[in-house]
Length: 457
Image (cartoon, rainbow, N blue to C red; front, side):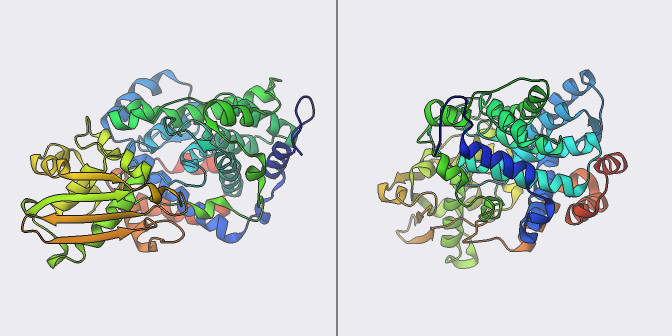
């Protein structure tokens, strides 16, 4: 039973106790191993994103003005205090649209939790076990809040429920009690951004600041609680049930708590585009697999018909306004793959956006919403695709579950290949390999401060 007023709400108490009282030894081994995989993937994604010109300019302007510290500013070779390192890392981590995500949670828990938890662990010299526990528990709590409501389509999910994840991760590492953690969750749930998804369609890069806000504000929430600040009695139900979203269910937030681990149900991206686009990419690759040589001459294509659910069609901009806007354009993603005959990371770059052949192909992609395809979302995300050639022939492809989800997992070699494609240009093969190996044995690390000092990233 959920009560209002001065009596604490049961679901928040349950989440707070879970975050504070779960020991590393209580977390299943497969959960820890998957957390390590997500961590290594996220570090490489952050490093690559930090090389973008806007992030390099931001870091160059910001770092000289902040307090020093022990936390990596990943991809710069520098360190800073936990607040500012997490802020920069979180912004970089979403720049390429390659960060992990989770449909049940309405977004991307990892990039909200990991920068804050990593920075706090390094700043305070905590162990690898401490860090892994904080990431898992921050992911679970914010993911459960994220999965307890129906997000409005206009709201950009970055910077919303993720503030709670950053708070729980930092709060766990700061030794908050269950009562303090509950206050911190309520403060975090009172301080999210209300960004809008139009940033995606317009290619507006302010959207990349939203996780940075979460990583920074989540840590501030912990400091506020430690200083005696208080939050409302039940902030999530108001923020996510009345303001940013609808239909918040406390019961959904705690269903299976401690037995169902959401982190195991995430997805890892291989294509630098919005997750909604991935089903169409997989359907395109399915169609191309039936063509001679698995490739078609761009000039032979009359049109491409894409039938999908609402959010896939929502990402239907045929002429992206910027490089960042290409991340949210199904027509662009399909066109550049058709033109290049492959789906490697390099085919999504600025050269493709400047290529008139790619843009001409994108203009010939027709997006068609199929209402019944919305019914199974997010468990099913169907896409049906047909490439119609100028000679009247056609190739068809389909996808019900995009690659990288629990029903259609990537091969381990695919995830490893992505890591090295991103990490090696930044750090070189030796350091990239050393970091990945460190992630895979992180529970043996006694002091994350030592790691931060000895491995310049």
